[in-house]
Amino acid sequence: KKVGNKALLYGAIAGTIPDLDVIARYFVDTVTATEWHRGFSHSILFSVLFAPLFGWLVWKLHRKAEATWKDWSWLFFWGLFTHPILDAFTTWGTQLFWPSETKLAFQSIFVIDPLYTLPFLFLVVLVLFQKRTALKRKRFNRLGLIISSSYLVLTLVLKGISYKAFTNSLKVQDFVYNDISVRPSPFNTILWTANIDTDDAYLIGNYSFFDTQEIHFESYPKNHERLGALLETDKIERLIAISEGWYTITEKEDVLYFNDLRFGLMSLDPKESKFAFSYELDTTTPELKVKETPKFREDANKLISLLWTRIWGN
Image (cartoon, rainbow, N blue to C red; front, side, top):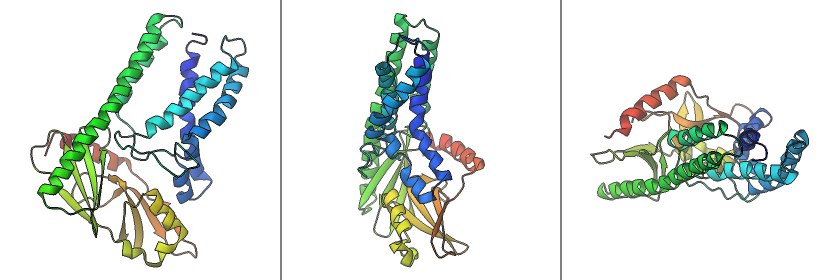
């Protein structure tokens, strides 16, 4: 009510600031940049420390507005704080309690989900065209929060149903496993993917709520022994920590690749061997160099096409 649509502008800026940690990749090595992503900038401490600073800067810019330094600081705090709360529901998760290394990752929603974003965006756009004192403005805003937050809670329920489907299928097929990790496939919460940890390999399976047949699990050898002496190096230990132990080692043209399983493959094709997050291990220099393999638009287009087909059942 005090600043009108400026609140939406600065709220958008506040909600974007935590993700500026990606700039680190231009100044530090790949492993360090990956460690920093969704670290300090996604913590409660960051929100508490920087909300008053950003609030003060904006207050100085808009001294004639009714809003006080405290008002602007609260706006920035909620923008900064709710960002990592939402990210905690994704596969990557957040270090909300930084400097603690504990990472919250509920893995119930993909980082881009139209069913979450579009209703919220539509109602925010409606807010833009209301007078700042209009009652509809508050109603649209609250409705956006209620719809999106309700969907977020629903994703936890859907994950629970999927988890039960995966574990039942593993039991029926007599698989013996040590651990299981379930997450939604890209852009939806209808098709789910599970990583299953067995002694020598990982099983990966997909389950849609429209499936009529038993879940098929594809096996991917761990090949951890291929690391050899590299297993004791600092960067490999840190990569293992980043992947939370969910990784395979592959070799192509005498080059080793460290594949983070948490984000799956670049395709739903059972013969696919390229992982979404893969790191080339360069051992030709005295110190191990780690380089993230690039992603290509054609891979994304292929994945989207296969996703659309697979969502409707097996």
